[in-house]
Image 1: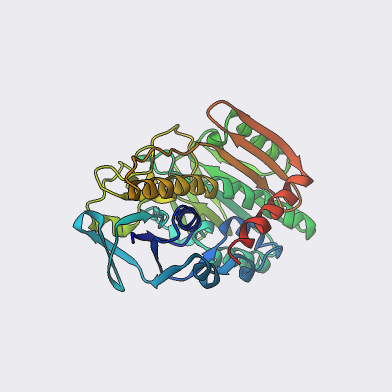
Image 2 (image 1 turned 120 degrees about the vertical axis):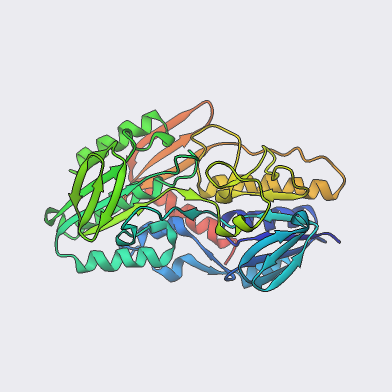
Length: 375
């Protein structure tokens, strides 16, 4: 019986479990994560408005683990030994015949004063803070922006920030108090949303102008303060700042021999194998993969990579050469509470469809469909 250890319990980890189990019922699967929970962060954009409550998006995984025949170890990964055959954790050493690292990424929090900004994708608690601050504010300036990892073009998550921007604008209008607020969008990039494709850039900028959202583009961030932000192109005041910094690898990677990209992620090949290590795979935000510079760090991409990693690991157990690759594609609906803009990008196509009510409901329907498999 082969033993597989999976680090993490997010999108990539859960897809890896399902894929492995579909390939081999006898594999012994151990999942290592701090909690046996799945946090559906794409739905957290709706917490500030009350469309979603935290409990709607936190899914206990014990029932799913039982169905899949998975052992969960409540622990933090701390390192590796024996060329990846042993995971060092806060709950002791865990031996494996195959390892899949799906523990996500870590936001780069080096910018001075970043503690004055809320990073939405850090978790459900962060979006609850946004909700509570919006309720407290009677007026003022709300600044929303993101940056990247200059050494890792793919290690950024800007899409959700457009959703918070447009969602908060819509929320304030529905509450009939938009006139009491100024909204500012900022990013060091001169053209926001380039990873979504050229068509999306013009669409996003036009949408901001339509909604009377000011922009501060193309200036490197210097610092945040209690009352605003400072860039190389000037400063602006803000009563609430939402900021998504670039991502790098988990801190526990530093205590391993895992090969790292210049941006700090785990280097992998097109089959999601970690370079130079036997039967060690990576999927999702933890990895640096070959592909176009617009390859997204999003749940859909993590699922595709995890499926490839699991299939290849199962093939190795059967004595076959791993040959499964993953499709590089970006698919998202930039939601704004009551409508949404559909964006899809592949190597050959870039589709952008304007704000429509149906896309908002499609996003909500997809959430229901996706989560039902884990409830």
